Length: 235
Image (tube, rainbow, N blue to C red; front, top):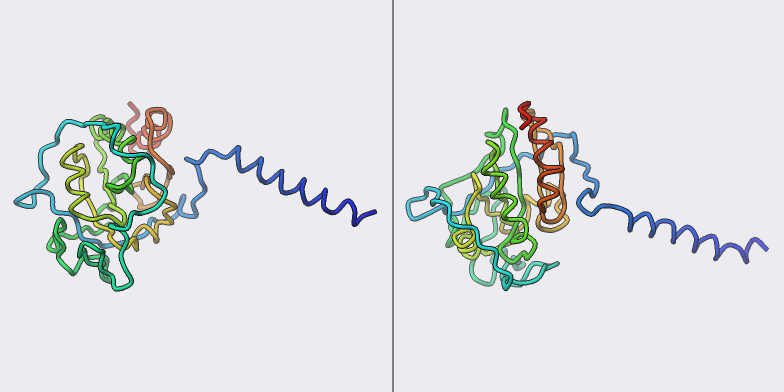
């Protein structure tokens, strides 16, 4: 009798787990980093302009023809076994700095996350091949315009030239744009995919993680309140 009931019990257990999974908000996927020190990293930045300075912001253009949401990195953005992408972009070295001096990145400019100590800041993981990143970009523009908080863009497994062209077209609101060509920094942050957004407090602890594109409701209901709370200056 018990053996006959065993398949039914297993099915009921599986159905319960599936039902619970469907009820989860994908933007609130758990992260072991929450309320723990953020990973410390050093990585090369993308070239910001002809003279290395950040270009002036351009109008944000949401182009519906830029493509649907992509679940995987395209071939042109994925490093090969040799550490060189098909277009010749070099893999980051052990310190995260791009030693190859690829087109679109600046081997002389390096971002050290330790320099953010004492500041509330936002880390946004994005890529030029990511459809949802384009959806969320207007919200990041709104965030940059309404709060005095650094937004650091981690360009994930991307061609630096494509990333720079994407920002030139849609607007560069990042305080720094980082070239995570081989995805090693994203791995340390436990990135599921792009886009993802983290909020780090002044003590260097991760206080919030959002998976997927930040939409208007997410900005108003989640991101801005936590930033205001951490900065101690509600608006």
